[in-house]
Length: 484
Length: 150
Ligand SMILES: [Zn+2]
Ligand SMILES: [Zn+2]
Ligand SMILES: [Zn+2]
Image (cartoon, rainbow over all chains, first blue to last red; front, side, top):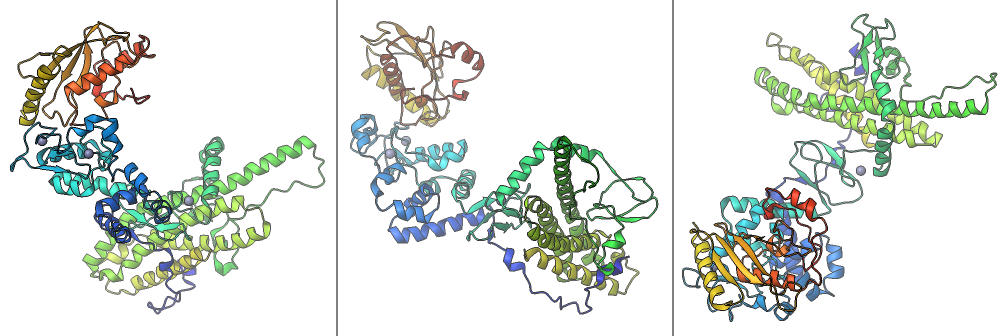
């Protein structure tokens, strides 16, 4: 049964025949906290050199312009002073006139007292002030900043302890005064300020992932996260190639509007086309084998599976929707025609939705398989002593299946909205190619790996054969997947 | 007990007795000195002319880094930012608190808030709001500040 899948297999394991296309989808990624700080400060450093300002000022300016250098260069130079006051890096001298109270903690008015603890400044109780001149003792600075940090994210925008002063407490003050846990918390807010504001940084949308991705080039909108998932940088949701963000949203809205009809589909479990026993799909690929009668068929079109192989001439039609044609000789009333049209439209939608949903489920199934495969890789290494580098292909294969399923899912959304028949034909051809190969790959990777763990079997050729097949298929799907 | 808090409260009490004589009357309610009552009269020429009000300040050990809890006790003034349970809608007491503020400054800004009122009027949602706020510290209420005065 499996032999038909190995048609492209070549014995030479190192020559897979395809150029490595991986680069095309790799975009820089980095860790949530550690590197953010460095990246952030690197960018600030460039600004510091450009403007000749301090690092503290650089951070405030970058934040104000949400890390957008173009906007900064357009607006900063003509409005330096006004903006400086607004972003709290330059003291607003009008404040002293408007609010005499703000004067009380200035050096010449405070009579040597700290206006927070009312203690006298001394060698032991030293004063410190930002450029506004409002003096407070160092111990109070520490308490003040500690409290701000523990209040939450807004801490990065903390102002001078003097009531009504417009100055924002700079980064270096937090660094100078905070200790241990407080400092950790502050760095969390510091990094968050960067990732939240920066249009080129997005958090990975997959649950349980703590990475964020920084994106440089606006050409391609899909980015890969270090966690192995990819997502659309523009809208922040899962990858939806070949659809654009708008199409994806329209589709999602349609799905929720049609949810009643969808429930109806879901309620209908399928039967084996041969023996009519109800069948439930619990695996990823579409190749079904009825447990009762062993009949092999395609889940989507219910056709014989053997007709789906390339060897039989490539008959594969389960990705193409064909409208039911009404018989020409029957007279149809106007009412009937519009009813028929509505029904056709619903059928068409159902057709696409079912396939979309099918790939979605298969994708989830593949995701759940990932930890299983990781564990098996570990065992193959420990029990059979395969070096890790020789086992990477398993990881690659399951990731490829996930990516293929994701693309396939959205090809049905794309197809649903594609009205040009000529384009549709070409598109369906590509879709079919990917779907077939992905199914083969998915089927291969779903097979239990346990036989390869048997210590009684010394011959490794079956394992290498399996490896060759897998690699061959994921090279094929990757090429098809990236050729769109 | 934080030395900062006690030292400061002691000096603030002196400040009120020395510099606000006849304007603010201070009554320290408990031995630990953490609960103060400050009495003042409605300003001459204002709609509260001559009426006597009492503000209660409760301090935590982290005062003045942390803001005090400030409410009216006794009969509160009828004002659009003062609820009948004595709670006051004034940003300075909550999000805009800074440690350089002090009891006298807070009291004076509340007095000036009252003085600028043209009519005596309760907050629009007074009855409802008082129910919501039940058993909640005013510092834990989600205040919406409508304008600068508020
Ligand atoms: Zn101090
Ligand atoms: Zn200041
Ligand atoms: Zn998108």
